[in-house]
Image 1 (tube, rainbow, N blue to C red):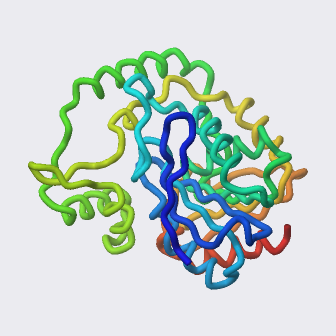
Image 2: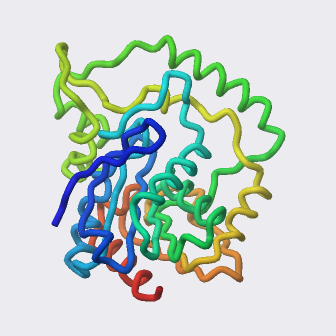
Image 3: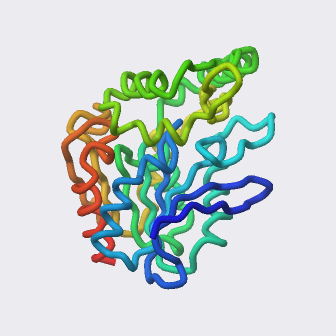
Length: 284
């Protein structure tokens, strides 16, 4: 049965879409969406997984500032490490079961770093169009800090954008993400709200500011090496080019699969993604 719930953590409300009950399951899967997406990004994958194994507990969250979850206070610009803390608090309430983290893009970054930091909690990791934290050369750190601070100032001054209809929002996201309108529509519907002058995005505008820093390549590799659980990396054949030639630590139990689609391949090939995830779950 599909249900929508809300979980409270540290003065933030986390909205979820869930199938099954943690109390009746041996394994819980937590789905973490990408930047400016929301829990609806995993609706079709979870539906397929539920059909394959109804006893699984499946939970897709809206990260703070996204979807139906609440925004953080006005001074918070959502640095990625704060999401690690959010997930830690949520998991403490959500499920005592063996845990599999499934992340797409930003969600893959969060899930991989969490799995490295808390290996005793995580039995499996699935990264869709992701492979650990983003990284760049150290000499770029000063310009990134400067550009990040200036982007925050632009966000503070930026007026709220109004859309004329949900269809306009769907068409915009479909164009930006290079995906069919009907596939991205559920994400858009969960991510907009009606106002007096039309429709507005629900997400916190501060999410659109640039990061103040990124890890070095050495730091990012250290995180990847500390992922001890079985893991699956799913890449879209037309996904991010930077991921097409990834190298995997030989010590890691990692499966890499390339499937039809682009960066949102889990929306384009949900049956295939669900089957691959189900295979990982059976291994653990």
